[in-house]
Image 1 (cartoon, rainbow, N blue to C red):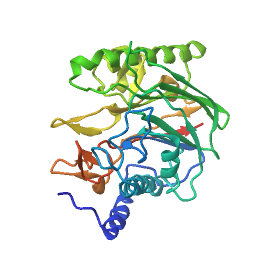
Image 2: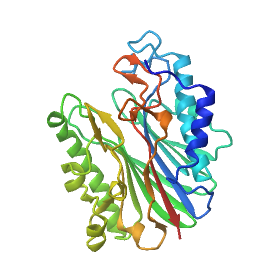
Image 3: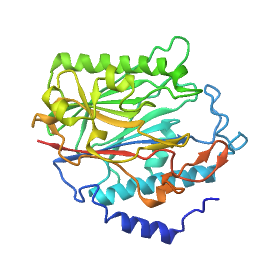
Length: 339
């Protein structure tokens, strides 16, 4: 059984993590740090009669209690604080997948002392009640609008895709957040649902490009598909080949996984997968507004977030067995420069 780390080991892990070169360790008014993390079922302990959340109650299959929720919030907030130490500040945009409601999201944020966050929470109609939660640095960023788009799955429901319009230092940019349908049962059965989600996202991106083909667009989330799958590689027209992208960027996105050599963000059925992704438009390479420097992207993990011989994410649950870990996904980080 996985042992919980002691306070001493957590402190040591934090210190060692400061030696990592993954992030720029300085607060910078001209830099924006964005963080995506599927945090694996951040539920409160109450039974919502309108959603399928009964397993995350004290009487449910997973015996989800206030004590377990507190430990979950402490673990998640610890990692966000480590990012703060390495980057010099909290992420300017914090986006978390699999959050049940605004209240539990703000409970997590309350563990982040002196945080600069304004919450922008857009609930969706997911059957289990999980949403994508977002908070942004109100001192550096202005939220101009937020609009959610329903993915029409013809009888079933999934998370909405939400478009946030922000501005920083007077420069507008767009953030499209996603959590596409899972690979329940198998890929072949569920793939048509993700193709519909991809077409929905692509329509939003095309509408932004119709306003300006140099728009700064960032697309992030848990896509439950990998960079080479049809939904990402063909429908979103995203590539990990930066050279090819820069030579012909029209109607394409650059998938940031092309910038790093890492095994993946999650580990399922005996293999590493790159389900969590951040993609950007050519606007982030035109030296105006937001700009994406070298080493902008990372899949963030420190030893305490890993377990097993292969270093897979230290999950909160495996099935109904409580492990007490952080999440079954690693977070993604993107640092961009405001020009």
